Amino acid sequence: MSGPPSLLEKGSHLVVYGAGGHGRVVADAARAADLEVMGFLDDGIAAGAQVLGWRVLGNVDWLRGRHGISVALGIGANDVRKQVAETLQRAGAALGTVVHPTAVVSPYAHLAPGVVVFALAVVNVGARVGRGAIVNTGSILEHDVDIGDFAHVASNAALGGMARVGADAMLGTGAVVLPGRVVGERSIVGAGAVVSRDVPPDVVVAGVPARRMQSRASTRTP
Image (tube, rainbow, N blue to C red):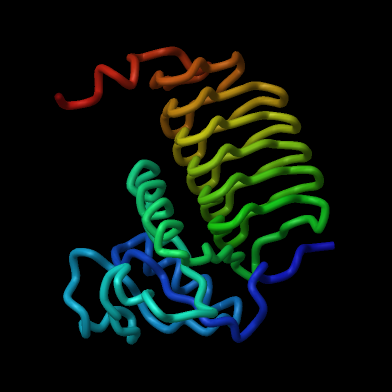
């Protein structure tokens, strides 16, 4: 049995924060789930611009004084998505959770507010997906998988039963996490990598099997 097409009711009023590539896919998933997409909010695109036929309404200030509107997070970068969610929380806005109708989400899985599950993804029994996380196209979360807040499981990635991905971590396209293995907070798993041993926080791993390449700190600019 698949889960409902969306945790928002059909016809719910929704705006998407972010009108770039990721935001457009979020808006399309919401449209497919029969949600009422009012338009986009964006800090870098002028109000009134048209994106996929929807209007850019403004930035977070547009929400002030408006009630009954949920906001879907249309930003791919984990750190920026987290910052936007915090801004929306301060503004009193509710985070919308969107599930593409071709995704299969067990009714015994848990999706926190702000999650987006894209087309053909699978979220199985007992899985938990944290606040603001992304379950991208065709990815598979087997039973009792735990995805931390604002993590990103990229397209066609797969996690075996009881695997865990920490908050703010990134699992690259086509990567595999074997059953019971852990990817630490803020770590990055490269595309196509196979995680056969636990990955500590704040590192970058790649390869088959996945090996540590560098620390996250070494990738940051001062």
